[in-house]
Image 1 (tube, rainbow, N blue to C red):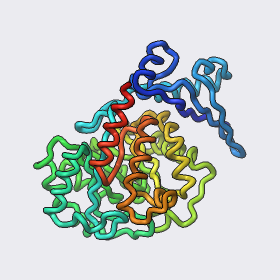
Image 2 (cartoon, one colour):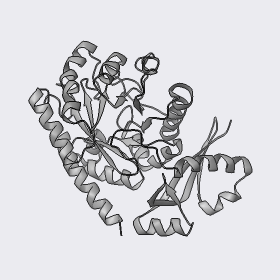
Image 3 (tube, rainbow, N blue to C red):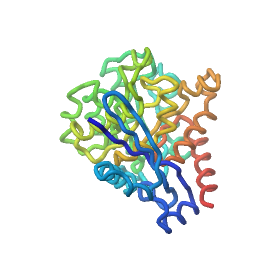
Length: 353
């Protein structure tokens, strides 16, 4: 069976975007008037082959009727405004998710914020630097890491979750966990968002246990487990395989409209896989949900630049964030909130013209 995929491309920003949208020479991305596109890339996939071609939006009418119908359906999702379902998060604007690792062994900042006073000071600093989402995690999912006992994981995060909303009532709180019991305990403390890096695959009962809770979810992609994911990851086509994973999960298992898509940079991907996903990220707009990407301090930056120490990868992080922003990505999961926020502000100010 032949399948088609639609990727918005050839983007315009600011005044140019507004002018082209007004003259109907380009479509708005996600209903926003300050970013537009006038070309699409169509991927065609069957059992044996994958092909692609670029066409101008004015040439969509020349496509065969069956293909045109599929493309138009994708375009409806691409151009539609994303509904705001997270507390104080507007998907028409860029958002920053600040990372709080309460672990002794995370790849970048393990052990730095375990103590109560340090964790809340770091939360305060991230919020005042521009983060409007805080993602709290008690288990490292770095390459090669092994799962830990849920009791240990809960002990690490409970003190932050218990007091977070008392101090930061209006800030969106996310829990980074693969374990359904921790998800449910966290919801009772006011967590707004579940971030499961396994894509709710680690525990097959996760979604059924969550069905009675009106909770937003990040649908994250990972091949394998943290312990095995970087041992020679393979795909037929990384971009389309991950798209199919999301589509299948959304249509057959989640049945939920409060979803954020995360392709999982560095989770079971080679350098080539990561760069393909970043460069073609706009394909995922045709799923119809907000997109989150976490490139912060990731290994692919080291592979390109040779910068071994993860704390020295701010430049690579910011470069990837600004490219992703130009492609319409809404949320960025980062360690260095202040620097990334500053970069986004300057980028957006330049693009106003």
